Length: 396
Picture 1 (cartoon, rainbow, N blue to C red):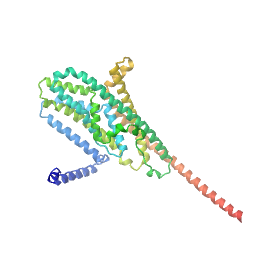
Picture 2 (cartoon, helix red, strand yellow):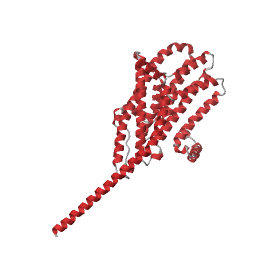
Picture 3 (spheres, rainbow, N blue to C red):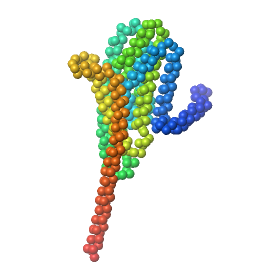
């Protein structure tokens, strides 16, 4: 009994944590623009920002400032890789469809991805001369594994979202055809039958923290210049006599930068998909869900196909102009990632601008249909009364 009570946190600590959380939530609710985001999303972003600040405080006491800035920048750039953004967006949507509020999808995926980078950086720094000869073969094998997992994951989830898109379009047609006032009782359904086909695979990722092992699989590739550059920096610093404990700061800064953007991406995606301003407007929810699903499908299939073609290029080594283009696309993943972020912003703004005229046309159409229904029902009542009078007159 004593052991059980000793393992529990003190009541004072629990009350202090609750009091701090309540005060933070109150401050969050008072900020005009910040309160539009869920408090959980803001909290996780602030925690990651605090960790980033601690990393920079640690860097300030060692003579590695310029190298540390480079490592941190590489982490920020790597977070914009297309496979990161696609995987985080797809799994955020799937977990929301299952009734969760997955704020930490991006954080766990980034931590899993960076685990491979941290471990390998330590190994490279510890055995810089010995491992340099064997790294190329390991990188090739890891690239095949990582690219295969990433491409299969994105393509399968892309096709799942194609089915979800058709489901959303059917629901939109039913909702538009319904009577005014009935949309409040309309239930929007989530992922469809393809989830049952692949449930053996996706059952393992039913919580945000399970994105960690998926991030590890994605990180086996070492297929981006940022990861190779970080390992090269670690090797150079080790060869120059820098302590391995100081070199460890470099992959930690890389992780801090990557985790900062990936966590923000996942939290903002969750906030967008669960916006309370759309909670009572089923038509608006379906409208923006269709727009975002279309973007998700395009991004997932394009990136997945590029990764699949890159895998074929690395294994079979075909030649030609087409494969030269595939190689250039694979070498510019950061541009693709930035384009994905830009596409979400551009298409999001376009969908907002086009929503009001589209909604006015839909509302006028529904109002006209409702008026026709009232006229037809009134005609039936009048016709029924006429028959009754005729029958009475006939009897008379």
